[in-house]
Image 1 (cartoon, rainbow, N blue to C red):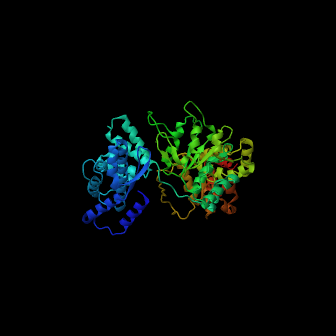
Image 2: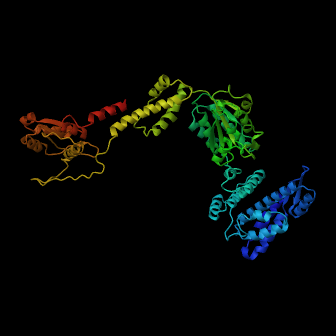
Amino acid sequence: MDGPAGKKRKTVAHGRHLPEWERQTGEYAGWIKASLKGQRYSFCVPCGMSIEVSASGFCDLSKHFETKGHQDAVSRMKSYAVTKAEVLFCQFVAEHNLPATIADHFSELTKEMFPDSEIASVLSVRKGAGFSDQHFNLNKEEADEDGDEDGDDTASLRWKVHAAKMPDEALRVCLKELKRLKKMSQSMPEYARTRNYLDLMIELPWSNNTKDSLDIQAARTLLDNDHYAMEKLKRRVLEYLAVRQLKDSLKDPILCFVGPPGVGKTSVGRSIAKCLRREFHCIALAGVCDQSDIRGHRRTYVGSMPGRIINGLKTVAVNNPVFLLDEVDKLGMSWQGDPAAALLEVLDPEQNHSFTDHYLNVTFDLSQVLFIATANTTATIPTALLDRMEVVWVPGYTQEEKLEISNRHLIPHQLEHHGLSPQQLRIPPKTTNDIINRYTREAGVRSLERNIGAVCRAVAVKIAEVTGGSDPMEGTDIHLHFPTGAVTKNGPSAGVTIVTCLASLFSGRLVRSDVAMTGEITLRGSVLPVGCIKDKVLAAHRAGVKRVILPRRNEKDLDELPLKVRYDLDFVTADDLDQVLNAAFDGGFPGKEKKQEAKQQIKQ
């Protein structure tokens, strides 16, 4: 639809209050007819000239070509007119959410305007004459549901094709393939190939894009947070954003980051996508030796498929992503073609606006894609390909830069990756320097990160040994029973005794039979002083006890005891529960020495 007709159509549609369609069917039909007559179509006649003709003059021109014997021109005119009329009708119904039954009136009008064409049958998107009392829409998901519900796969595909908003060239190809598909049996191999082709054409982002973010300050902050050093590279990215602010139609440069492995070339490409708020897709080119990986296979071959560029666009679902062509210096070459030569069209801003994939066989605009290449050296990149890219050198890191990168990025990342907290593992700068100097000899930081990961794994094993094993308390209910004695129990002095009994129960070990104890216990395992120490100790002495465990803060109360009692008993004073348990069990409490040894190793 050309500009003036489009404006007139929009003005008429929105300049009135649309009443209920049942009372104004004739009015709508007249509006559609007027709109169609206002269209002008371009046709390529056999002599190579391009002429314009209105819908009202279509029949006369068609008859003229028929008398001259130009049947191919007549077929092209009919196909083009059908396409234009159907697109107009789809747009009108979708914008105004009209019931589909109005299509009957539209079909009658087109029969009057194009009596000798097949436009009426083409517009019948459902089998049979009429439409159901439902509303049209161009939403892809709802079209899927309608197609499955009615069993008319061709009708669903037709609506999807129009909703994809593809260029006229691609639209004509899809409608042609759709006609072929409708005549095929689903058991034919060609049916599946044609259906896959149409599905791909529908899923490609012909007009879907994301809006760029050109905030220089935000981009500077993001790059500084994600990457330490690399000042030259970050400056080039900020220059690109600044120029884009001043000139929106700038052709995106083809940047090529060249540097040793592990210096962050790929991660910088990902950060650029984050700065622009674009989708990111990485294409690994190392070892690729077939040009079909770039340009796709022709559909005449069995198992043909599109190239990696088109597949990447299908994955990200937008036509302006950031594509990272990784390891472009490691492209191969074989009898199947040179992929580096195929990249020449992709990476040339003067040509990639009409990139042709062999599988699609129609042009696709790659001019909005920001291509970034990475390489370790320029020596193996073909000269013609290198000439199309702007080389940005990325040098290796100094020892001071590696230390800072470790503290900012590598160590926190490895701690999180191994489930450790900063309190469980702290790697001091001296240790990091020793790892850099003694265990890594590289320009990047990959080996450094691997060695930090090895330290994290060793610490994780030690922590698992200390805290691992099944929990004996899990699924267990504890019942404490104090039998009635001569004196009613009062006060917290039996705290350490209760805990010792529980430790014996769950560890399966017996407490010494000649030990007595008293003391209050806290939730954190501290032993607090209690009263009546003299009375308790004398009772224990009469019972034949040999060892008495007391709170350390009750040590002063021992002076009140007779010398003979102090001489006969072994007094152990304790500050915490570990000391109590170690004294109550022969050989110490189970696992105590192992636990202390593991803690000491972790501290070291």
